[in-house]
Length: 59
Image 1 (tube, rainbow, N blue to C red):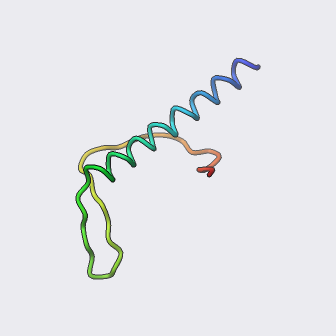
Image 2: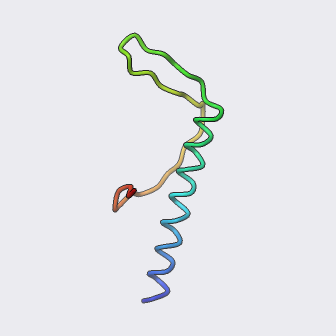
């Protein structure tokens, strides 16, 4: 059971790193899109991640 717990922890760390890498890419290379409503966005075309966030994002 210890091996399963360790594997789950490694997968969670990897998933978070993939997410953080994507956020960094969007911030570094994305295009700022102003909006008339005041809710501006930064877009980056054609990058996705697929994951299951069972516990949510913890800070």
